[in-house]
Amino acid sequence: MGDTVGLWVDQFQDQALSLKYPNLFEAVLNRNLPLKEALHMGDLLNLFRLPMTRVAYNEFVAFRGEIEILRSEIIETDVWVCNWNGGLYSSRNYYKHIFRELDPPHLYAGTGKVSVCP
Image (cartoon, rainbow, N blue to C red; front, side):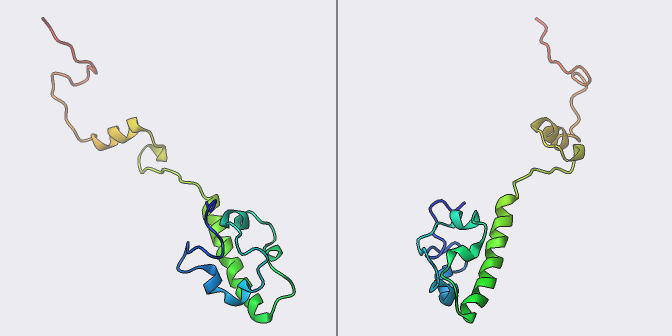
């Protein structure tokens, strides 16, 4: 996430972070920083010129919270959970679940094979 998305100038949420945190943006060292780099940065204070004003620091606290939420969303992976067969997904289990009430013709019931006689 964020290879080509700029942390400060691109609008990937409700508004660009440079507009949302204008006082903090004044202390930014790299205004063209990609979002991906910021998400993998250990100490977010390294993104800014220090010391910063109290207003900028208050914005930093809110900014740090948003970045932590984004980080947690990235760490989570998509998992397919089903309500049958103990939650393990497979196409076979899916079809067994969908067609569980289908009653096959008695001719084929229990054979598992279809054969044609000449």
